[in-house]
Amino acid sequence: MYPWLNEQTRQLTGLIAQRQLGHALLLKGIEGLGKRELGLQLAQALLCQHTSDGENKVPPQAEVAVPCGHCHACQLVVAGNHSDLHIIRTDQRSISVDTIRQLTQVLSESARLGHGKVAVIEQAEKMTEAAANALLKTLEEPAGQSNLLLISSQPDRLLPTIRSRCQQWLLPVPDAALVLDWLAGQGLGTAGAQANLSALNVNQGSPLNTRDYLAAGTDQRRQQLLQQFAQLRQQPQLLTRVQAGLLEQPVHLLWLQLLLQDALQLALGLSSASLRLVDSEPLCRGVSELGAPRLTLALDGLAQLRRTLQSGTGRPVNPGLQLTQWLNDWLIH
Image (cartoon, rainbow, N blue to C red; front, side, top):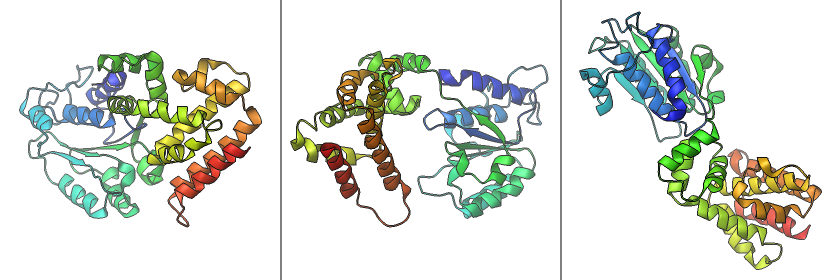
């Protein structure tokens, strides 16, 4: 298990051992925390033959329900073909009502290995309203020895009736120092602590997203694009290149927003100790010379631009045209 989840794993397996884990658990937290891995660990603990007394209950003397990893049930979970473990995951935009109805039908049947049944619903916020409603009865009265584990990085998108029927467990954003040590152990510390901390901030504290981001070399693109933007007022010929770079991925506009926020902080005379892009402080200081009023205006416009491009509703928008207008305003004022 990932080091930032050790304590959460201990507490949750402790609840299993004490028979205090609800039959429906909602694991929530930002993307890239390892919620899926934790959910599978809990499923394995619930199904393990050595943590059960035959009724899917851990012996009372146990402090935590740690799966043995060796029994037939554990081996089946690891292999991904345990007949009583049902995982719902999809690359589609939604989880359909038919998918949930099939799941509830399976959960209503007897466990094939006699140690209960576990369902894991990843990205549970993708359930359509009809799918969520179809799950309500099972959440209220699970058939037999069933446990449901819902995983979500956007729990506010779940119906209130779903959330209220679950034992909710928030996985906090881990301490940056712990994640930086872990990243270094993954062979991703060569760029230095400042660069890795900036990458972690760019990824909103998500360890796994930061790992993938660094491994793909994406941080080099961030530094290149922000350097070009910082030079834009002196070298307007970079406009087309900057515009194309910012439109490559939605997250590129977030990079720009973080740069401007750090610059505003410096323009207001605040400490540089809390900069998000700590490895880009020279760029931030250069941009900060434009002054707080100008930067505030630019940030307001950029925030509105990001909301418009991300809304997905209303009239179609031309991202290139919208961004061109914002960049022209940046150059003129």
